[in-house]
Image 1 (cartoon, helix red, strand yellow):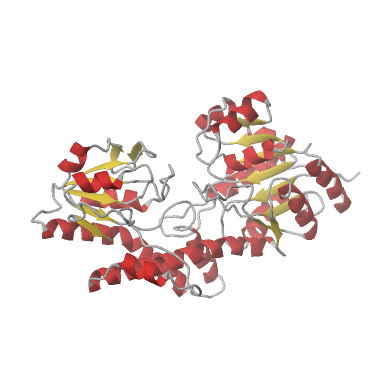
Image 2: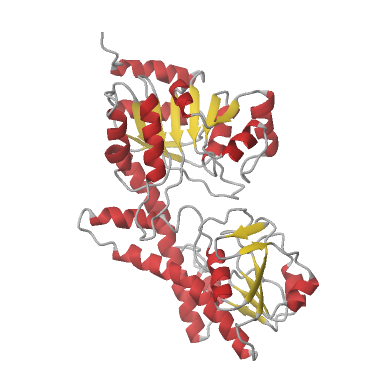
Length: 444
């Protein structure tokens, strides 16, 4: 007798999902995976998180939170009191899962090409335990075609078939760390699948926890949606970063220009310059699309140029810091520089791909004596530097030849900074609205 599950058996899986008796596995317990696991457990699913990081596994099982966007009390309640959420490093348990969601990193190689080693490795672990009636969804950002060209063949190498034996979808994460308004639950969710039967299962799965689920016709469309969203942001950030460099050359205040332009009630959106772009998406995703486009003999020149401009910003900030010091009779060599903020964005502890770290490293390479303050990132090490955050005191500010504001965290008293620092380079306009003590202040 064949072990193949007829397409109609998707109904059984959908029923298990809708009555929330399906066992859910989330692979990768980082900024995407842990909030998703918590949301699934909150509505009644039993959830098993998979991660090769033993520290993360232990933390989840002890109810100890390590992600800003997860509430400490909710994690404790789900892991310890209700026992609906647990974590493991044992891949064999994938066979128990009814639904498996893959949320692993998709970095770039040194040559800015896609590195899907984590996605591929996890998919092979899933394939070794794949059984009829399971649903697999990829949430990791990637190029259009990954689900059907990479994941589906690996899973079908088992002899099982998508749409008949198992179901496969892509639903891109839309996590915005630190965003208090839009969370995993109330951020609309795009869902595309490898086939129509898989789409039915995927929609049933995500509608249990997401307020607005948006179906598209294929996994490839969903993959393109994700890379477009972040390419849109990367291109517009590059535009204002280039404007900042031009305004610097012309002696204009780019922040005044942007504020005035923003008063137009139509045809413009607010984007702001800074020391570069960081995080898990914007510095990486456009390169996934750029790489895939070459397969179709298509050169995405606009996207490539935006990436080039954004990657130039740390060097521009360092050059401007050197100019400020020089204007005051100081050199960068042996200058004491205090950097405020290492996280890639305001009020988060996430330093992934942070341009602030690049600025800090470049300053140190050029001979400056660097320190940093960031209450969200107490320790920083990247092979070049190994530093701990210093207290933001009047003495620390006074001893610095230059203070560089790279991340505009809300817990910093910028009036205090201006009052005690001799020279300040503000790359985020964090000092907006402060009228006093601006004599030594320079904006990006």
